[in-house]
Image 1 (cartoon, rainbow, N blue to C red):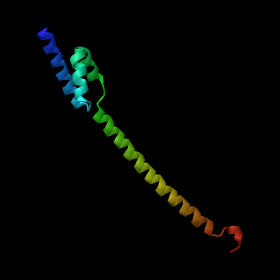
Image 2: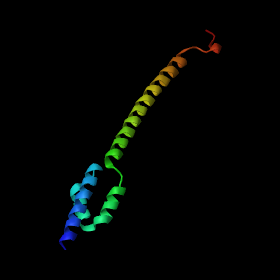
Image 3: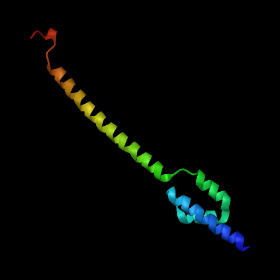
Image 4: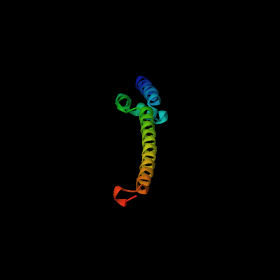
Length: 95
């Protein structure tokens, strides 16, 4: 009986260490690890790292923001070019 409780505490502690490294709730994973031992360890090891996912999401958002700004600048250039071309007389205008 005492060995089972010690193993459950150890499993909960290991789940906590892994969960902290992956940006997940340590309290939740301690409880899950305590009650589900080896199964919980396998699950937490297989789950993706939230820190890496958040960093990738932030990088994508910054890239989208940069591309939108670039597109805005290109539209402004295009509108200015169209305005200048519209002001110049054509060959058939006779000027």
